Amino acid sequence: MKLLQRVLRGLKHELACCRISKTATSHEVYFGEFTQSLKAAISVGGSELGLGMMLFSLAVAVRAERVIEIGRFKGFSTLALASAMRFIDWGWAEPTEALQRPEVDYRKLHEPKERKLYSIDPTPTREAEERIKRNNLSAYVEFINAKSNDVDIDIVADIIFIDGDHTYEGCRRDVETFVPRHLRRDGYFILHDYYGWFDEEGRNNSPIKRVCDEIIASGRHEHILIDTCYPSFMVFRKVDQ
Image 1 (cartoon, rainbow, N blue to C red):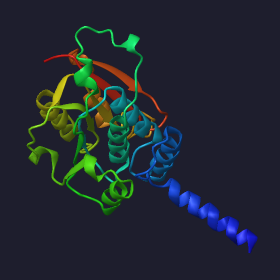
Image 2 (cartoon, helix red, strand yellow; image 1 turned 180 degrees about the vertical axis):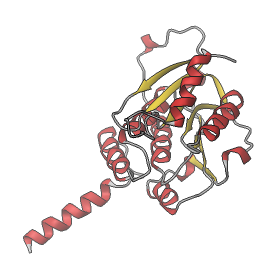
Image 3 (cartoon, helix red, strand yellow; image 1 turned 135 degrees about the horizontal axis):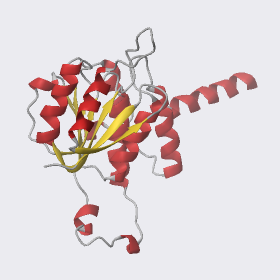
Image 4 (cartoon, rainbow, N blue to C red; image 1 turned 90 degrees about the vertical axis):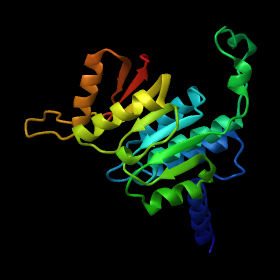
């Protein structure tokens, strides 16, 4: 009986760790629940853990107010980005000495805002919608169930995550359509799956890499490759108009 009770307590703990509760206000508790939920969201055909952690960290770092996600699948990146928005809303205090940049309106930067993740995907999955609902993040996500080239939204985002159509033409179209029109200057856009489609000689034939290489050659954006040892991703900072 005691053994059964211990097993049941363990199962209860594991289930609790697979969602982010409304009442979790401790940062220590929050990160435990968040990382467990993110780990549980890893699936075949999805993204590696490092991508989710980076998306969360980047969104928090820039205090993202608007984010566009192209490609949702089972909601891994959706969970990471929406969780970041909730964390920002909880708030934190930076030292007064850090508020030194004359071009930044810190009062405006720190004031409460309505934050929203616009998640675009033509093939919605029950897993993604349930994952967001289960983790109490529905208020932060607007599901747009359509092809990215059929979407017309009046949004200028802080971050755009592109992980939808993995053909060269589709990925290139998403970059050319969304980055100029829907990403603010100095905002960030991320392309996932830099590695993949290897041939028999072990050469990387990823169409995403081809798009990344062309963007880099244009010299229009700052960039860095984050090599996770898995599909990996390229982060670009928009520095042109």
